[in-house]
Length: 322
Image 1 (cartoon, rainbow, N blue to C red):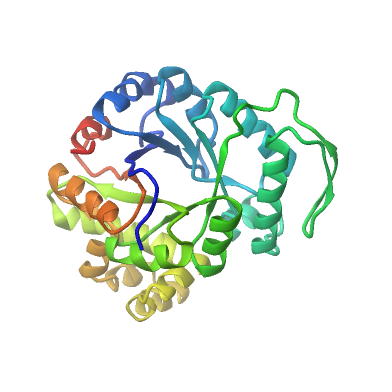
Image 2: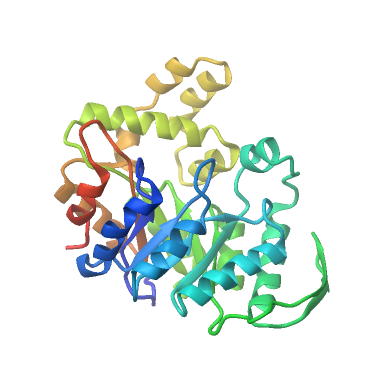
């Protein structure tokens, strides 16, 4: 199923190992190089909004998006305020990507119960659409209540919304309530499966881990550590199961659950790493990322994954769209 959206090409900010002020020279080159987007992420380092606030002042046309801002760790009104601020800095080119995040981040690090994720995502999107349009919101949603909130100086135009979505329910919700779905950890061959659920009107955005080194052994070692870290999280394990990888991942997951971390890494086959992590010479990486677009992904977002001897900043022009 084809998409009706413009094909784009993004990069993840900040680049690994670089302080935010050091990014100005790099970010100002993104548009001339052909990048259309810069997307931020947050986990336990820099927050999702600050890098984009800086990039807004360094660029003119680059689309900026959060992938993602957590919808449990920020209250609905705070999410709306942060989005309105960035939309004001980059009128017409900011996308607020939100998602439920993970049990570790929400519950273990922030002490917040991760309950009713589908309902919370739905309610948050509906609140944000009203609030960012400048409406006064007094509503009792299923998962929270808002009484009398209205943004001062709502942005014009309101920012677009996107939702992190890994399986059918969230993908359909993203399509219906946001018009854009954010995913990751997929191979080009997985894109048609996701497109079939989301439909051709939904923009599909995916962060793609790219390790631009010709040392396949090093790249696969890095990829194994990433895969083990993610695919032992229930939501990602379920996503890969839906995509047909449950059997290949089970030995690793069983060893990990038993406390055998080293053994778990050894049980991740090269073929799986090669499917899910882009690696090789920069030109080969660029061609592999282009395969995602050929399969129906609207916005591949390069997530540079450093390897020894590889300088992320030097890779930015080499991984730009051809």
